[in-house]
Amino acid sequence: MKNKATAIVLIFVLLVQTFIAQLAGAVQVYAQEPEASTFEALASLVDENGEPLTEEATLAAEDQVHVKIDWSLTGHTQQETYHIKLPEQWQPDKIEWKDELHGDEMVTYSLNGTELTMSFPEQEEAVQASGTVELSAYFSQDAIGEAAETDLVFLIGDTAQVIPVSFQVKEELEQEPVQEEAPASSEEEQVNEEGDTPESKEQAPETEKEEETPVVDEEQVAAEEKQEDARKEEQEEASKEKEENVEANDQEADTTESAEADVVSQAVVGEIEKNIITGIVLRDGDGNLINADENPGNKPALGDDVQIEITWELPNGHGYGSGSTFTFSLPDIFHVYNDVNGELTFGDTTVGSFTLKEDGTVVMTFNEQIEELSNVHGLLNFRTIIREDLVGDVDREVVFDVKDEVVANIPISLQPKAGSAIDKRGQVNRAYNATEIEWTVDFNKQLKSINQAVLKDPIQQHQALKKGSIEVYKLDVQLDGTVKQGERVDPSAYTVTEDPFDIQFGDISSAYRVVFYHRDYRRRRHELCQ
Image (cartoon, rainbow, N blue to C red; front, side, top):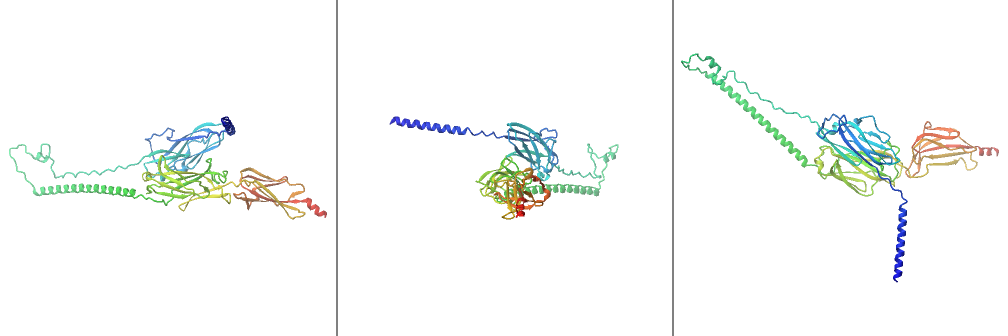
């Protein structure tokens, strides 16, 4: 019995080893994934000569500012694109290259408003690269206002780099008027160091043998005393008026401080009714722009990954407090699988949190930091997919409606359901002994970009093209792969060659329908013989 149990255990061990070995062999057939590339960038403010500015340096609001961006890329093999969002305090139309070098074989730069794009071509082997790009710009006076300082935010992918900037403030020094002392009365006597007046000194007799009794003019004395009293009274009134002005200014300052304190203490808590969304951009899973006007070659399919970049900003003096919320919804073209929670950040400071619900509702909740900071703004970045159950035309617009305001209307072109790229069918003019065939050819139904497209259809023996019978129409392709005939295309948009038969369209990215007729001379001769 014991030997039988031992045999069973050995058989079990052998089976397990065989199973593990098979698993090991199966794992080895998979190729190892290439390591992901790493892109890093660091921005710094410099002077006209490219030297870094010190932290103590101050700028005039109207000065031109220079920035140097050092970047590095490691493990690069596939074609990649990276985006750097420049500070919103800059005027978009006044951002310039400092030199004429916009790229080389390794990288190509492009500048669109406040967004810098860096494109890297595909490489056969993983490479490491680095470089520097320098830009110059002017501040937007509306964005900085009268602020003594501001934070410049560079959004490098999902990372924000904040550079504080101080501005030169023009201070007007208040000078108190200097009160001049009233000149001494011309009738007052100036007493010298010995206590004698010049007049008495001049009138003193050479011999002081006899003292004369001075003659006092009582009216003159009374007039001098009255004038002296009036002068003192004027000085007292001026001093009193100055004290009253100082007291009034102090009271006004106290009232202003109290009013400001009341405003802070009475910060609004609740739903923010005014729109704070400033921009929305759609990108595919690789970071490429989705926009039929600006990037017509990028046509995502149903179920493809999508990145939604949403920028927001609170106006200065907004009056919102801790607990204030802002709510909006994503368009129903996107499918959210589960609730998503995250933090609202402004530079390195957390100013609140957000929640994206499965139904596409976004709720932003702010904390007490928004009561103390100015120029508060940030970025929301959601990753989702295009719904797979969409129906209708492949060309559509994604509308973001926030607080009864359309903040973005993005045209997109989607790929239809996979199917045949070209279809051909014919219809005879009669069931028996037909003399004509109407041909219908639908092509490029997958909406590919084709350079110098040519449709060729060799004519069979005993058939000939009916002159003037060619008609070309646009095709409205549906998401399920079906098509609808659209408007007729002007004949000047294509060129026909009859022998051999072909139609030249040039560069296309749309679907077309071509209708033409063939005559069957063999069947026509058969009729004549009958």
